[in-house]
Image (spheres, rainbow, N blue to C red):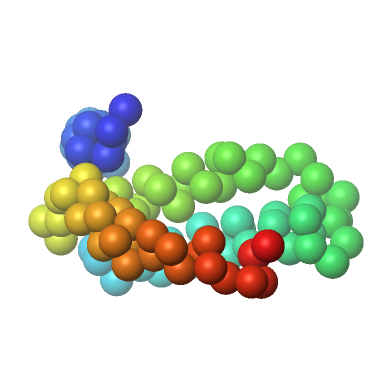
Length: 108
């Protein structure tokens, strides 16, 4: 599914199950919370912190999907075509960074 269709799916879900969108500030707080949950898993599972028993069953994919859901909500409610914005950003990064990473001695 592409980003544009994902935005439509989320909008339909909100209208059928969610009653309405939370306001933008609430969704920003939710996004911060969800990113924190991703960070906790990454830090404990792949970083140097020990993983607590209660965290071992947490699903990183599910938490990343939570982040994506809230990002799609924010895009919908602020009128952003995220597919268009992503495509534009990818073009910018491709032009700007075409040789940059290949020439980075730290990455070799």
